[in-house]
Image 1 (cartoon, rainbow, N blue to C red):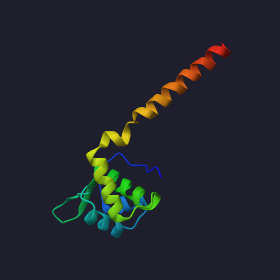
Image 2 (cartoon, rainbow, N blue to C red):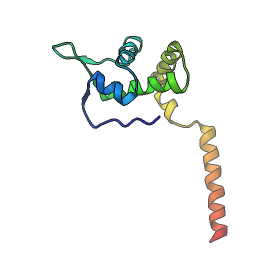
Image 3 (cartoon, one colour):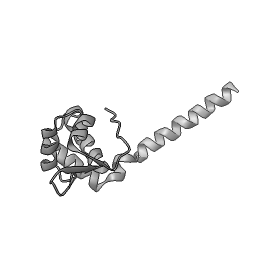
Length: 114
């Protein structure tokens, strides 16, 4: 579910809905449900979403549609990711140790072949 995000500063709701593949009313609903999405408003009250809003909406879509979270579950997961962003991106020590072991084995195989 990789989404191509154009290199722009602001996006209108129609652009957001096309990029994400959802209707504009869905984007507006998510905006009311998830605090991480806060578009700015123009003088004419038109919503302008920043890149970080689009990235948050893409994550929300992934949690709801791909990972099959409920709205409440997605809110909880987003709060966990906000509280511990490094835990979501960095592997734990067990994974690191496994990777070290694999690397050592690959080097041994390389040495045998050369």
